[in-house]
Amino acid sequence: MTNRLGHTLQQRIPVLAGVSACPFPSKFSVACAIDFAPQLSRTLKNRTGGRGTPRRLVLGIGAALWGQFMSMAGNSGSKSFLASARQKGAVEQVLKNVEWPEQFPFKEEDFQRFDEYNLLNYFLYCICSFFWKSFPLNMNNIYTPLLYQLSVFGLVKCGAWFTSIRSSDTLFYESPRFVTHIDDPAIAALTKYYSEVFPPSSTPGVAILDMCSSWVSHFPAGYKQDRIVGMGLNEEELKRNPVLTNYVVQDLNINPKLPFEDNSFDVITNVVSVDYLTKPLDVFKEMRRILKPGGLVIMSFSNRCFWTKAISVWTSTGDADHAMIVGSYFHYAGGFEPPQAVDISPNPGRSDPMYIVYSRKLATA
Image (cartoon, rainbow, N blue to C red; front, side):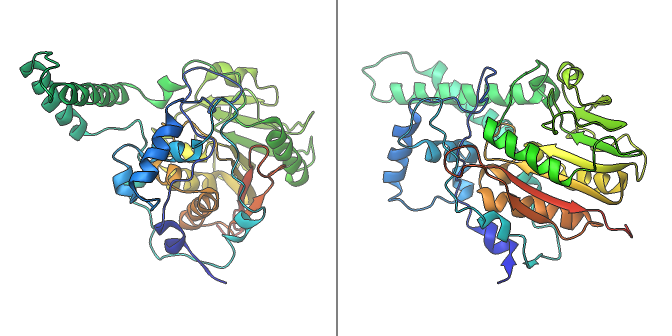
């Protein structure tokens, strides 16, 4: 049966399981409970009669936040964000016999993030500030509590807007986080997959790029090559990575141009970071350029992320859609074999899911 990208992504109902903002580093950097969320989720669900909410409306409060609320309903505590219980193997089917649209189906707004605000928020703040100044704190006035709530809401949103202007990804990742962002079973599954597809250790002339790297790359124990380059945002983390022979500090969302020669890498890996790329086509075209003919790209992802940094189209869709999204990057970048998806989730429903979308550079590209 043919898969159609438009049909798959049109009915976006946020299903983010395992997504949350976390103000402090932890092993599960995305598993921070918010106590009021379950009740709010049930309230919102009751008010909509259980029907799906249009995505544009959802974005009013943030699609990522809505997805977080819905996934948290009925749970609490740091272990409340359970991996989705999607039937194992479903993700592997979405990239088979795909009918791709002629044009790249995503718009600029699909690559916006929750920490990005526009002038509308500023105007909201100005309006609310007017009421704040115009109305004294008189609780006998039935409108005062509402107006004060609106003004605080506007202040918070405006503050976030100004912060997002000053803050870049470089600042967000400025402090090193020596943590892992997926659980141990998922890490083990990824390492096992690498051991099956990587060139043998210490193969002469082999070069590997670990994109969006950190202090650990999850490569097989003892794995070595003459050239293993890490590219990331935090130098302290990259210095700690024992598998790297050298590293590059670069923000791909500011400069997607990769500082490497054409046809210079055999393998490119990216672990749970493809959802943060705001210029994915530029990055994938660059990956194609620096790959040797037949070179392998392995994009791995779970359902966990820094939800304020993940792109909108990611936070408003589910696991199978994510595989389709990554597959579309390969397709529209050009020069790659048809992408394939693999579900390597070790314990579906009991640990973090783990998915891979991979492709090879065409020999003629």
